[in-house]
Image (cartoon, rainbow, N blue to C red; front, side):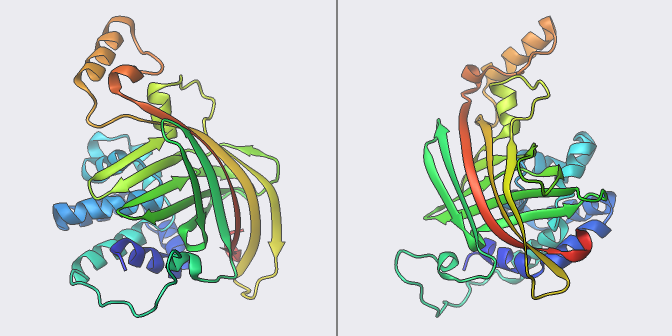
Length: 318
């Protein structure tokens, strides 16, 4: 069992604790704790922690790394948004604990899984989840995820009937992991037919050598003007309240669609790309988008997907 899978399963088993903890830890303390833990775990652990946090939050790895390591030089508002994801601090603690306490090779697992079927797919659950998406453009792929491969981000905003909400999926395929996230909407409503606009939507291919992440923010840097019109969208088609066996939890069946355009360019940026953007800004002022896709070797994709999930939410937060 891989480290990331161990942490993911611990994360799910402590879902309620995560939500409570993220609400109680203030931003400055969270920043200091995260930065200290990252610094003390060393380079190899640093890369693995960033890898896990990127998968959990749907954040851009470079943004997340800069927030943790050089917060004084990075926009506080963006860092605060990245570090306010439900469960982030608890997940970071679990990552650090596993990286330091579980360095030895884990014992071989005895439970057998039928050939061609992953352990996540073979397990049964009373809260089934499925996500399907078509990726087109510079990447062409049919993406599917089920059950434990899917996570729901959820947190109340303090306004009745309004929540922070998003759907993320992660699949291991050979030596790589493919992640897909709708982005996180900070003012989400459980209202069918309402077009809602999350931020941070992404499609990423992750390997031991790094990741190639197509994000909605990246798209606005290279391909389309950032004119205030939201790129990512979530629309619910069904919101059904189901019976729950636990009085502390409220169970919902949610069906919906999502879409976004993602952009990616290799980092660090090509010299020609960065110099041209700087010269243009110096001579003519700001340009929207600021970079030329051809000089930056940027690529783009279109994602159209749907999800069908049954999820338990803390009753006190609804």
